[in-house]
Length: 272
Image (cartoon, rainbow, N blue to C red; front, side, top):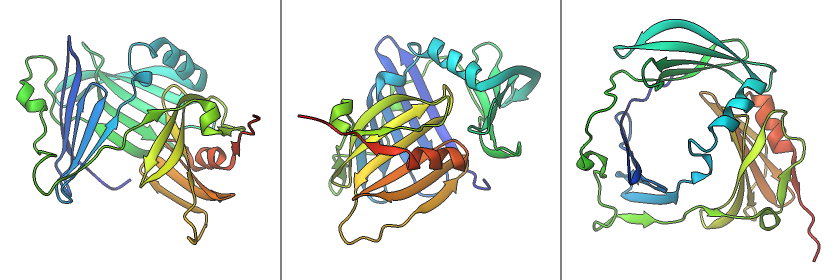
């Protein structure tokens, strides 16, 4: 949309794994630090740090070939012109959706490494709804370990450390499915989440590029249950009540696609 946010990012991969630190430079201070599968989000104004597990199920390179085949099934891919972003030459790649269920994308990938220097999401009217771009980037070279350590200490006096983490769950335990999911999207992940003290199910779907999540959590007793639709940039969010539960669907997809996910949630009947 019309909002702009700037971040500083360090990313290192070595023989011991993947490490990353993301620091927001606008608005309330916020920092995200990842060491392999452990992700810690720091909110210094609230003196709160939240730890979660980053699932390895969607990591490269294990899903690359599968992603590529899904992408060409759902998008028409063509090569664009050469461009320049953040002082680096890059190749434009255009992904046009084959139907109205997904957004279009334009990437500009650095010529030597393939690192996306700019990624634009286009709506059904071919208008940009979201863009990520580097303004300055250094690729390769040494990164000091100190640069990947958090700026804050979650164990310092006055800080609160929330260690609710993701726990993988099997389908019978979750007891939810999406019967009429949008064409081209497949389920890539099932999780149990602890959201504000309540156990919630999360189903994650992908078309090889875009992702959509469906959360199902128990409704709060006495709380008003009403449908609600909101959006932020390329992400649409649809909330609806369903028989004592609240279903929330969100994704980088058109509103009709997100609403189809939310309205197709069905409880699985289990026998003992």
